[in-house]
Length: 137
Image 1 (tube, rainbow, N blue to C red):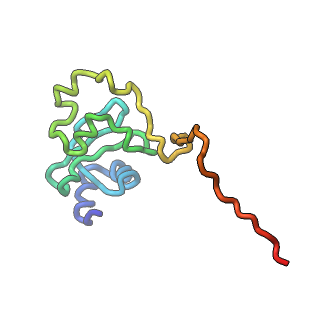
Image 2: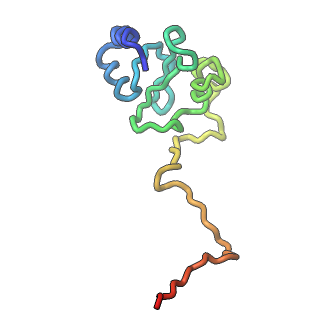
Image 3: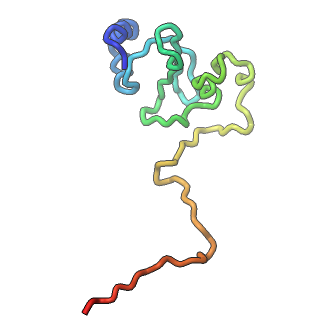
């Protein structure tokens, strides 16, 4: 939650269109520098001066039904403050796509109907108790 002064200052910096976009999808107004864009189209921003500690970096997802698994590993490390340099400036990450990394995004299906469900292929050793109700006389 931001103060009225901070909201008005950010409104003046980012404009009405971006203000409405941020209020719809972020729930707060943020003004910062554009750091980069990943291969999925997500935009990454940073503001070291006016934001609270550990809230200085944020992402604007291209897909509005976003899932945090849509962030690439290099950008995730930068967003989580594991590294100081974003992937656009890091020479190790700029070497290209790593062979173990997936070429396309595979969404996290945990809560959806497509989630993996375990099942047993062995015969059960115990059977569930089925009560037999005897009618009263």
